[in-house]
Image (cartoon, rainbow, N blue to C red; front, side, top):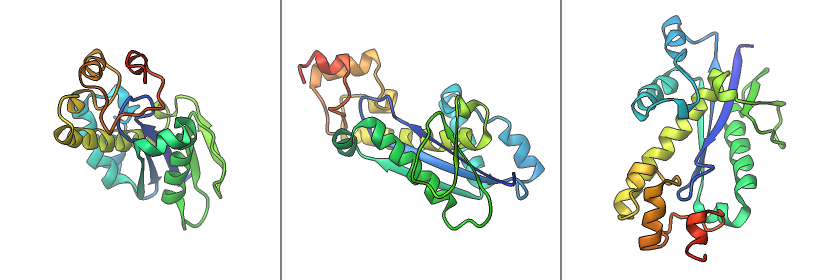
Length: 199
């Protein structure tokens, strides 16, 4: 199919920071041979180093017909629940990237099935390893979220957000034990680090 849109998220399993969903649509009749060759490096964002993701990010933006990014804040995640927030963010990103596009678009999601879209959506297990559109969305979501967390490190010193970008690491858990939680920490996430603080 000519038009393929994929969506994926970053930050679903983190202790702190937003959940970021991205959707990328490729028009395979408009992508140059050179861009197609470069896109072969796409894979699940977690399989790439931070440097590799930063190199792929502008390539995806240049090659894509459309890109959409949706962010959900910590308090919204706490209020609505992580799973509902995740599905809604993926749906909104995919809807934004395909809105007003005439004709058929293959809409793909990494592992999750969502309702409420005007177009049929196909959930693919390990989709970020098999679909270029999903892998591209994974890169966009991860780079966008990591940049936010590195910027937030200066505003919330002491938790080393620039290093672990909000995920549960021994260093992050130690910082929570020392300092408690920041405004960026999710209270709805049932983590051992939080249980130790009796939150």
